[in-house]
Length: 111
Length: 114
Image (cartoon, rainbow over all chains, first blue to last red; front, side, top):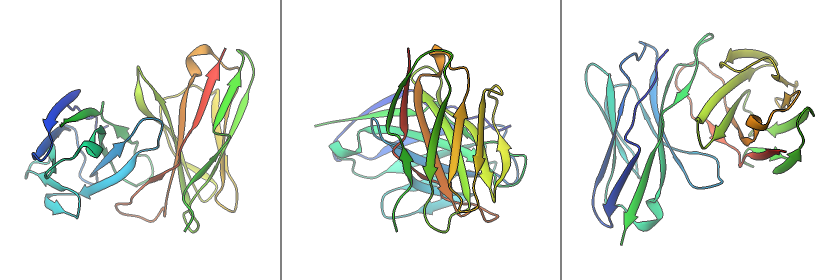
């Protein structure tokens, strides 16, 4: 079962690029990597998902090396509203798989 | 489309009681997953239902159970409540098709056990 490890917290100044890395050494062949953002007392919100190499959308990029044992979420030019907890989720969608959220990384953006 | 809705939003129970939480997925979604979130354990997967069948299950005791109806709405039941069951219970829905999916989360039900 693929479990994940993330830094517990990070601080960044407004306007900087932030990179959050997630380790998932036991990732299975059919597992995808998904990142979520969560604000206090709200449900997590989907940010980005990928299987390998690089994925980019309007809010973030996801880098996945060839061995897929880790992944890095990149947030360009963060603002105060990006202060939140970011979770890495590794899981497949076939019968018998389970889904683990990482410990979460609490990102604080400083003015 | 309306998002995932959960009822009730807040609940207070006493030890030994049971509780039922409800989740209405996004229209057209057939998969509903439940998670428990606590400050100490973070987000933990409870179970997933797809087409009225439990498809995946996390490592929770049998006091935690669920079901899904033909309209994909889901309920989660916790019997013989313990103080440690106090948590935010989150429901997430997705299409349920094979391959990678996006889960859409509801606002959660905050349960307090006294």
